[in-house]
Amino acid sequence: MRRWRPEKIYGWDGFRIEAGPVSYGVTPGIGGRIMSCRYAGEELFFVQEEYAGQTYDFADCNDLR
Image (tube, rainbow, N blue to C red; front, side):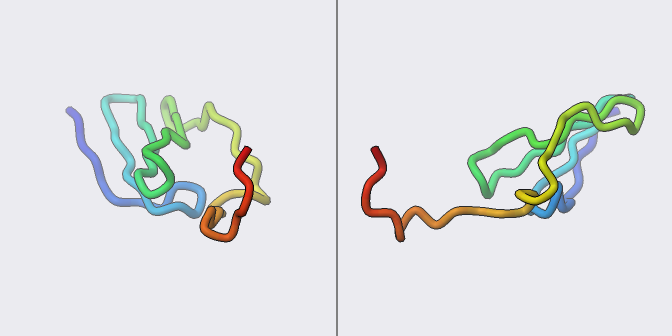
């Protein structure tokens, strides 16, 4: 059975997609990234906690080299 639900993924708005024992946390607001991968409830990805939920406003940047 596959299902998805809205959820905060490490502070970002996203969706949890589940299929059996595997689930993915997808965050479309920051580029459609997969920010979480769980197997049987155990997180397999690493997220550096001090950056969780942060975004960057590129409008304030003058040089994007």
